[in-house]
Image (cartoon, rainbow, N blue to C red; front, top):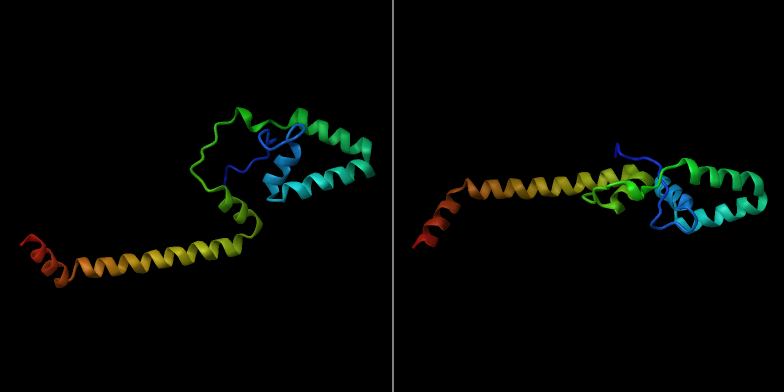
Length: 122
């Protein structure tokens, strides 16, 4: 999670990718971010236009980045929007894996495993 930076998302963006970048950074809905931008444009046109095109000029695009797709984007979005529940889910999954591994270790170190191996070798 330490690589979280604000970039313009040129793949999902319409005009410069600023709204898509903001939605990705804050884990907002992209459509809601665009609607909010249009409402701000109607309400505060000069300031919104200046801020938007300032972001287009100053914020780097993600096009030049070499992203590692080894992570799950859904997990990152869930982590940003609700970290407590996401971490609880991860903890539960690891506890299940730990109990399965403990059962496997008990079986492998038991005499039953040795007996099964002997029958297989016959």
